[in-house]
Image (cartoon, rainbow, N blue to C red; front, side, top):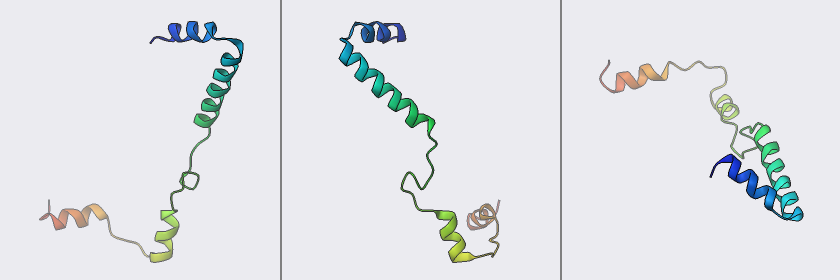
Length: 73
């Protein structure tokens, strides 16, 4: 369905259904405009957890460890 067809169909809706459509569209726009953080999505704060486990220690480059495990590349 093209945008023009959608606009024509929305324009043909009864006034109450058109208002409902506009309300739902605005809700989608505001939700899309709000940046979702890990906390808002319900994800744990992995950086905080790693900091609790390792503190200020510096870990070696993980890619180097993976390459060595694969036989050194």
